[in-house]
Image (spheres, helix red, strand yellow):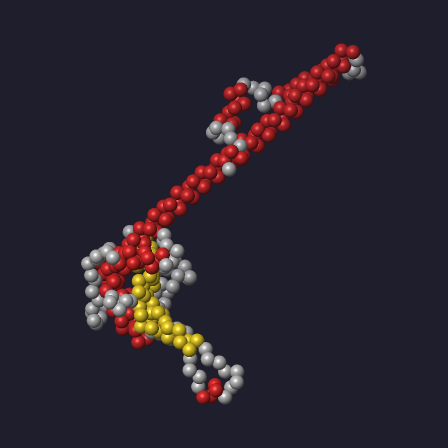
Length: 292
């Protein structure tokens, strides 16, 4: 019920009313567009006709169309007077226009609720032993305005017709609710952007730590090979003291070549500054496990 609690708290605030007239006067283009859309559609299983994707998202009974047009016309005009705008849906899954408040889109719908009733069998169906009564949904005449965003609540905030205050009398509250929703959504977008930035920064740190760790593995492997090669060179030199090779000149050339290989392998053969240079450009040394 947190979505409705959000609406209840908002309804306690005193707003300047935005009265809905009894008849259409100079209807807005979106109202005319919606009126045409209604005329081209058939009722759904809930007994309501719906708008197209390029209209304000409205679903009401055919008998409720005049009331819906009056409400939508006042809603659109009042919204534009407050500097708000309307935008087409960004995907085929969005059912209608969004309202744009301070560059933040907010999805919403206007709909008529339905009552669940059991259908009455005809005489023909009584003759059939397999015939059964089934559930139908019929328009209730009760309008609702839903902000189709979850915001900080678990449910989408919804404003309902009430006996003491129909939806037309809540228009200012609804518009303020949409402004509040836009602010919440903007804060949510900014918060998610900061979270993504932090995640990307941590991912970069992981990447740099892995690069450093791989370099350490490489240095350790090459240094180990260089040390082993030094031991081999020393061992051969000791043997040459007691055993003269058949081609001494080749043996000395091999020893010289082996010493150059040691120098190229040993990561510490240069200065310590040269050794640390690769690590230093990636920041303080750290292991991937340190970032868990």
